[in-house]
View 1: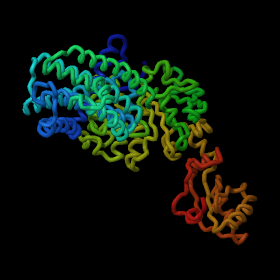
View 2 (view 1 turned 30 degrees about the horizontal axis):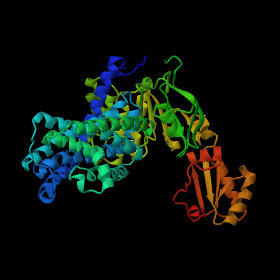
View 3 (view 1 turned 30 degrees about the vertical axis):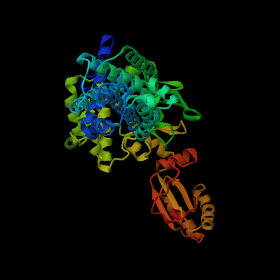
View 4 (view 1 turned 180 degrees about the horizontal axis):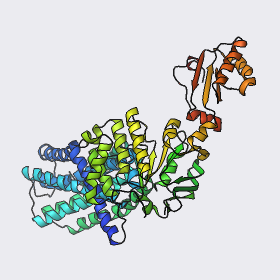
Length: 273
Length: 328
């Protein structure tokens, strides 16, 4: 460390506790950088907000009257909104795949690899940035929901717990799609690869309609897959009824998804460049 | 750590990707505060070597040290001491130039209060001040490239890796970058750069290693490398293959047999005098050249001399009628 002729103070090497706080500040720097993208490319945010808003309006006014929900005592919009919350975060997760693939392709990951930063901050910054975006979009879509007649029939605490569950679920998906993005390595391909995985999860689910009219084999899938149980959990938290089973199933999915996807993404990141 | 004066030490570095051998045991040393050029065609292993030295890849065999720190076992210590500008402009297109440099400064663990001033200084140095607050996606290719090199300098790394730094730069920016590099070196920075251009290595590097298929096939000062070739390369294009063969035979007696490629004869020599002898000989045989080129040796010539093959698959220089029509 006896470098001479350096006029700017040398970077300070981190040890012990300062490593941990360093990892946090690196993660925040990366998350901030990912959020700036939304400010610079507003169409990204517009897409991820307009689309769910359109879903809310379309499903409420177009399909609302036609959808039959046996035994559901409230207007369709109260059934719909929890589904929209889950749906918007699921489609929003594609951004993680596109983002990681772009960074890989542009060579940015290579530069980050050569910097004395906490390497965990690259993936953590990505997923945490997406989390912040989801919070924003969720608030906006909730307001639109209230405007078209959505009502919470339990209480604010349970409803917010439901929103928290969706955000947690979305966070787990960010890891899946960060992995997908690193694996395919190209933003367009990442986008193309993500949609076919997501569409059946969102539509073959109880997010928008009751699963009862689906064929038997599909029902089995539709009732237990993560989008459905999370939507059902939020629905129970917002409309009342037995919640524990759905919430636990949803949390179980979150744990399983993170336990599988996070190590895969980390390993892929290490070998990516 | 500087007592031995060696900033970069590479010994027996090997790297395979599946069945492809990218590095086949390379060795070299770079003294502190000098510029070392890795010279070679695409796919020679230059970039792989840089990736290993910047801790991005781990080698299969061999070892490398940066300022006394092993690139595998002490990767983090190495990362505190290096700057990298890779082959692609590794900057975020959605951030401004200023934001990109600040991000690198933060992640390089620079003291917060020093980052902003350093970013401004570099934007100025690389002639990007006017574009500092514009998203990088509005930049031209050359501007991105300059920002990328600037990003490698943010934390004033004592060892700098530049992978084909001037690719995509116009002449003026290239000269400016060369000046910047020389200045850094005069202040004590060690630079390892890769290039496909002999001229660049010649103008910048104190020492050069020529790399081909993962091996160092020659090492020395640029002048040493070129002197092995002679000072001048003479190329004589003949109107047809028959004439070319006759000319080759006739010239063989003069100064060693010239190399024949298509209908072009190539010879390197120390003295332009040889040219006069050659033309006289050809004239004596009733042969008249269809084109004539006298030039400085290029990387391609170094390659031809060292390996017997071209540096690049297609190296025809436009404007030589005899070659344009030649069958490939």
